[in-house]
Length: 278
Ligand SMILES: C[S@@+](CC[C@H](N)C(=O)[O-])C[C@H]1O[C@@H](n2cnc3c(N)ncnc32)[C@H](O)[C@@H]1O
Image (cartoon, rainbow, N blue to C red; front, side):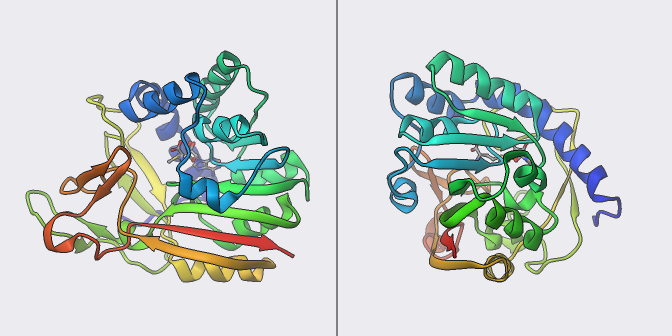
């Protein structure tokens, strides 16, 4: 169903949805594993991601839409002066709690992503980091690209690791074992989703069920970044996903799910993009 309300009403719905899910996310296997990796002196970032971001020691890094901050804390662990931004108060409370337990100096700021440059100032960051499950919550990608550009120092680097828009477009019909195009690939107004679950293991039936999401094709993201003054020098697509996006997916690694049978390896599920500003 199309969203016909305002952007601020959509943010309120989305925030309530995220806020309510935080305790279940914190208790989930995936996030507990990430927290335990941090407690054991490690981090929860993949080697690929670390390679794309490069050496962060002593560098300023802002993680947009950081959720409970485990990736942000991981960048601090690797030596970055890291800041996490998210609009969910309960998510940031967990992040701060874990930061204090780990004795790291990561900062967390509660703000809408569109206000990040207002909150943090312009031109202060070597790296802007955006990870899986972020852009679909944002109505305006050109405006977001402008914020990224404002946050970065000249020559600063943006690294995105995101759900592929083809993955957002497809769905597994209930009781069936195939995928179908369920949503338009191309940008349109926001879409209302109604669901009482979440993406991690949890039996809880949540009360805040409605959220608003926007689809952002790769062409829109790439063009928005170019128009904002960024130079793109890496774009790769992979056929695996870090959570089971459809019930039919099979686990291929601790944080990797793939489509089964004849579909394996044929459909893009994730993309990574690296850009720098001039
Ligand atoms: C899927 S999570 C990102 C997950 C992260 N990659 C992780 O695994 O922890 C998306 C986050 O975006 C945040 N969010 C959604 N819309 C936002 C907005 N407009 N401004 C700031 N944060 C937002 C939510 O609160 C949530 O924490």
